[in-house]
Length: 239
Image (spheres, rainbow, N blue to C red):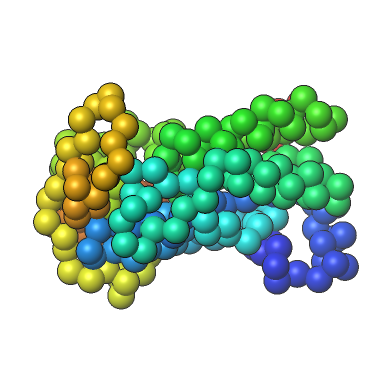
């Protein structure tokens, strides 16, 4: 594994001859019900990418813990940043890595919030026009694998802090799961934006954590590993 923060500059030069690909993981510090840690998004994507790094050669950059949270931003523990901040940060990271010789960039997010993903994608769209020879992909594994992951979950429309996320934390770091929050779904009146989001979604759960299991988590993580490895193979083949 090429873990960026653990290598020396001499090793960086050596590995740069072997790969021009770097993966930037993005997570959040965000409520995930009363049973999962605030770093759930970060934990799942970072540990999944470490598994991918055992199979493929690429630079794995340090995790960015903070992201854009909207419906959860007022819940206890959530620390959000603005889309503008995320655009500036992701742009700076890519430009600096480009200056050091990297050319293939994957921005992979464990958080699938719409404004969060839009900010990252806006950065990609701007930089692909500005930097010569760049390949860039921005995605959340949940978007790529919505159908496959839905087949693992028993809960229809499972989402935030529900059956699947609880299952994956049970598989990756079971000691961090503190019981199970009750089944819940947000009651925000679509398509309206509301000020008091906690009033409409007090428990911060979207799904049924009680149906979670380590076995489901293992299946979900394996799907994510295989999917990300497939994108990395596409980067290597793409002219």
